[in-house]
Image 1 (cartoon, rainbow, N blue to C red):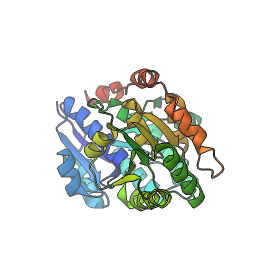
Image 2 (cartoon, rainbow, N blue to C red; image 1 turned 135 degrees about the horizontal axis):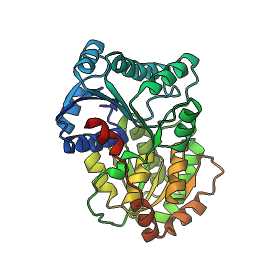
Image 3 (tube, rainbow, N blue to C red; image 1 turned 120 degrees about the vertical axis):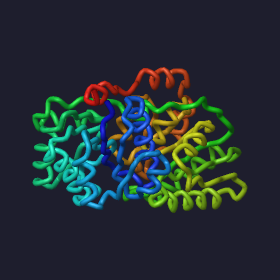
Length: 340
């Protein structure tokens, strides 16, 4: 029997990772004969067009309440929704959506989320109470799992990121180097200049593609990095990749020889293709992914010996990387059981 599903997350924001997680989730739900799917989106028309589902404005509260009332199941996630580092306002919005679903006695699935940190005491208390009532809680990292276990939520389960469940076509490597950057408070001009110098020294004779995964945050820093490379070598071949759909970005990444990336999902997708990757960590989740996949990883400290890490990246055994990546698969059984 088909279910009415509402999906809540950071969707419609043109963020590669979130949109690709949504694609994987929707594709799987449709395999389970779940044809009535409504996504709460910041850009409903684009979400409808990209994913062929119903969509309503995330902050049209009356429509959100109505959609949840008519639903059977709320799926909250994936991503890092339940935290207040980005915004206390966003934390309370996502908790409100869960609260509405539980008020109407709907099944609630917390899907592959990163939980915390939550500094607001009322927000933490509310999150703890709501997650204890949820029908299914899956988290994507051990830090979130330990936090929930500390809250007494023993039913929480650890899963890998949903993009391990994304179907990829075969890679087609070319003589191209990928750089993926995002704006971040700890990403200094000194570090960028040092990274540009190392990239130019190692790959001056290659094509350099600089990837924006969310244009509102990434595009300007990518254009700036291109200018730094050109300042070092006016003949170096560069291209800033922006205004692309997730599918277009994935196809381009499949053609890379190497990738140096900040964003979690840039590292993950390239590793799944067997592309030798250097992670630039701005967050624990990137550190943890690099550790799990045995990728070289450095922080954004300007004193970092970037050449050392680039040499580590070049020395990655591709077959060993693919073996590690292929040993991981997303467990859909929790979701499938609740849909029955």
